Structure formats: C-alpha cells, structure tokens
Image 1 (cartoon, one colour):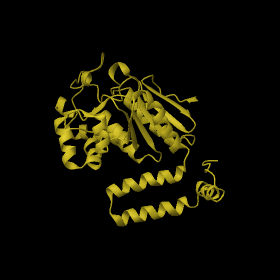
Image 2 (cartoon, one colour; image 1 turned 60 degrees about the vertical axis):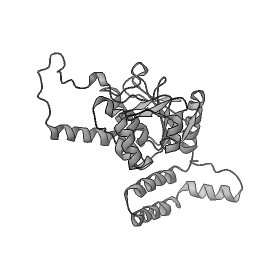
Image 3 (cartoon, helix red, strand yellow; image 1 turned 90 degrees about the vertical axis):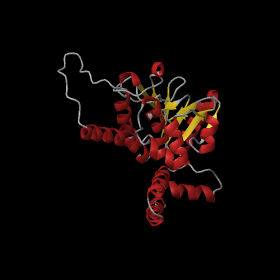
Image 4 (cartoon, one colour; image 1 turned 45 degrees about the vertical axis):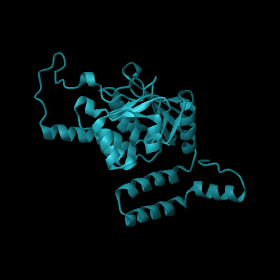
Length: 276
C-alpha cells in the first residue's frame, strides 16, 4: 500500500492494487466540508487523475458518516481573521463566480474524471455531501443509514449539482420533493429510487465497496473511461451526438492492448488479465 500525501489529516489517501481510497477524515464533525478538507479533496482528484497507477477511486468517510455537507458553524460569518483588516463583502456577481469555480473544480471534475469513482456511504450524506456522493459514478450505502438534501433546513437553495444529479436519477417531480422537503431518505428508498446502486450491512460496506472498485480498477481502463464519457453525453446530448461519441470510443478502444487481451482470453477460454 502506498500512502499519498494530501497535505492534511482531514483527508487521507492510499493506493493499493489500482484503487485509490480517499477518506474524508473529520469524524467529530461528521466529515463536514471546510476550508482545509475541501481544497485538499479538489487537489487529490487532480493528483489521482494523473497517476497511472490509479484505475479507480473509492471515496468514503471516516466513522459513521459520509459527509454532513458544509460546516454550518462557519456559515454566515464574514469576520476577518485576527490581525487582518476587515474586508468588504463580495458583490453578488463576485460571489457567484467564486462558487461556480469551486463547484466546477469538485463535483464537475468528479463527473468528468476519466476514471470510475465509487462512493461508499457508511452513514449520512447531507447537503453538499450528498452532491459529492451523487457526483460519483456508483454508490454503495450502509443499509441502516440515510441521505438528505438538507438545504431547506438552513434556508439555502442547494449547490454542487444537487438539482442536476437528483433530477437525472429520480426525475423532476421526486427531485423537487426531496429538495423542497429536505426529508431523510432511508437506504431502502435510496435503492428503489436509483440514488444508490447497492445497500449492504454496515459491517460489509468496506469489503463490498472495495470489491467493486477493484473490479473497475483492474478492468479495461480505457474502455471504462469511454463508457463513463458515453453515459455523460447521453444525459446531455442528442442521440446523434451520442452515436458519434460512441463511435469514436469504439474505434479507439478496439485498438487497445486490453481489447486484444480480451479477445485472446475469449479464444483461450479464460478470464482476461487487463493492464498487463
């Protein structure tokens, strides 16, 4: 196992057998996002995208929570740090531009990353924490927990793609209900709605999620990357655009070593050994 330095103990990362396990590590605050954790998460995504040893990312939270979203205790405060002169609050346009950049460098980056991301939810995902879980490609959830959009409870409308991801998973009517009520969505309902792919007992969560990530990391990596891109384009574009994107991916993937190995394995009646 290789430990990758994230610059902070609030975010842990290790790499083994092609899987990079990224752990939000603030269990005392239910892994709430903040000025240290969130930039580190943005940075590690870039690091892992560029690391050829990493075939898939497993994102989880320490303790019995995935991520509680933004740290509410730090919201609504514009106080300057000790010794700093007071700063004028940003204009609406400035604040919007800043938030767009923050969102694009986190959940958009996750959605567009060329490697599969599996989110393992040992406990609640709320607010922006739920948005981050939804930005992953696959989700495995402990069967005794829940998720919630949560924004309503603090008088906010939602960010980090919450409305986009939810609408595409559950449809507009259900998405509006979940956002507008902020109610808790138990694991069984998450599975039924398609918010998560699997629910398992908490004691089995780490093994189940890692097994899924290992399967992806040690599969035909280039082809899986094209699959992710194809589905993203299918959500956003027309059938004509999707056909063009699929055609390019097929032509490129048929020329890969992984494809040639898969054909040999089929002819030899054995399992393929990708990435070798």
